[in-house]
Length: 480
Image (tube, rainbow, N blue to C red):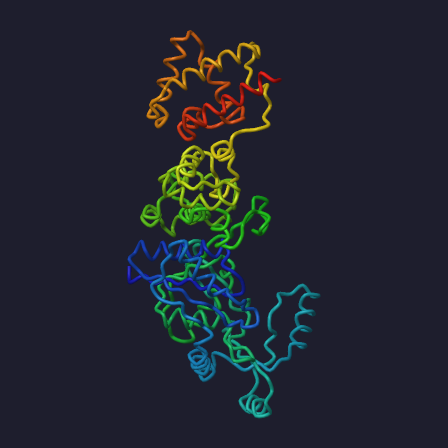
């Protein structure tokens, strides 16, 4: 295979969307797999629709997701002279022509075609204008566009790396506008010229551009250029198979950062939107994605965006993270939720206890509620096990409190496993049951019927706070 050079060419008409990020990822993976180059090209020829800050957003998003670019960003708006040069060549060769039709006339033609249930395309009125007629109109200053003169008698055939052999009769192809009246090229001209000039080997882009590819091939042929290889990626749909939107949980690529997702998890998730590794493996490191990715394994069928699957995948990455590293990312959310400590210990302990339960970095923290704060206002009936009386519960808790206070060496409370060994041994010696002791202990420490492991909670809060919470539970239980 010759040198692989691919490009990601977003239009700055909005912030980078998750679908665009998948296109960028597939291009990046293909380049990395073949030791090629990944180029960022900003396709900003539609100046009226360009959004302030969009280019910066695209660059920031690619950077956060770790999709490093080898060249760019290249802005098409700064290459007008290049496009004009090739338009002149096409006009000289008779492969393009001036069109002076007004917007009103084109709208009327379209309306008639729709009424007659015909394909809507330019009717070719200006296609046969003589050189003298063209000169007269140009000299008169009539506004114009430049259109591609499609050779209608031929057939355009190409092999798409995803969809296979595509064959289109040229009579069904529109004489596409190449240069607009404002002097800016259309997407069709600019992307063909740039792909040639940048020596792009593979054009990997969204399925929506598949119908335009025959026009692009005709342009390549008209200019005498070799074709790149084409691969069109299937659409990404919502679970209801409608166009992907915010209501499906799909938002701008950088918003996932603000929502508490890890970049590696999002990339793993979107890599599987349309690409099938042909195995049962679902969790891939970036290195594994590069090694395994193959355009030949991209599906033709549309991919379904499933936010629940994304949440699950993100949770798997969170579980595998080092607790200290995770704490750095999780702490801002805990502080925002109202939990604060002058030391890192409580933050680290909280994250260690909740990491197996987190779907995102910004999930509400039930664990922090009882790690940072003494539980209050919980239902005292939770302390009393079934088939057990209040008096029996009070007696057990008093005994446990006496035992825990006798452990004068705080080392007993620094490791959950050691504390578990101590307490379970004491339970056996006291001829009590684990349930009779550990149930009210859990509730006293957390105020919850269900919580993180009671011994890990004990390790997190320490002896003094354990005894204080047991005292509080006893006091309230005796008063009830």
